[in-house]
Image: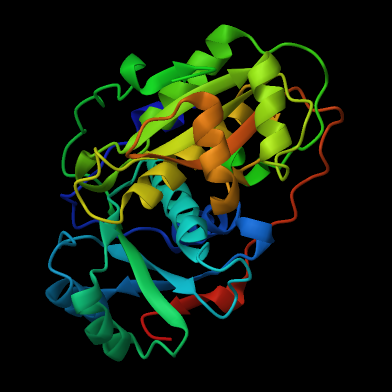
Length: 163
Length: 163
């Protein structure tokens, strides 16, 4: 099962094929089974499709267009018990989303919702106070089979018992 | 393969059995195959065992004692190209560590290196400037088969196209 972790790729070009609702549900389930600080689960998710997805991508231009669906991961600062840890919770959830997407034979990529776009995204999606857009994963079937991931292992980054 | 994501548990009690070096190597490989902002890979790892692991746990008292080995994940602020994103990179790497640990039939838990302990950890491990201890995962064989994970899925946290 390590293969899942070692073969995930960033996918930025998508076929027009729709993504099954059950797949989206399963991906969200994996996201919410990520660990979180003191189990605070300080995350919220907005699933975007159709016009809203298009409008989101017009605002957040670093997100690739053309995905069938996408998941916006938001920091839930009201649920955050360990101050400052919502970013770690939502990063773990985002990684689980990417891995679940890959497990399904779908593709996606972790994109940031930049601070300068956050207010427009909040307005578009009617996101309430205390909820902060964090990352967005567009999801769809990859246009082509992605090239094999270059193994990121770097022995220079591993230290044994002392630096 | 979603099962891997949905059955990971936090494990805090460990058997005395050693962990195979190849397993540690495979876990580190999975860690470094995590995504990172602009592929900056702003992470470094210190593998702790024996006396150093014991001393680390004496400093960072929130880390459970008794693991055979452990991996300290550090922010590499010199490698960070996208300012502020090392935390996200290292969170994704930490989640991959936990999932690889679980895939191996081992157990572990994401523990924080608190700011008040960071300087002592840096001194113990001779960690250079620009490298910041972030998280620590103790790794070993679980004392008991963990109870099934309560599914974290919460439909109240899912919003469709608008809040």
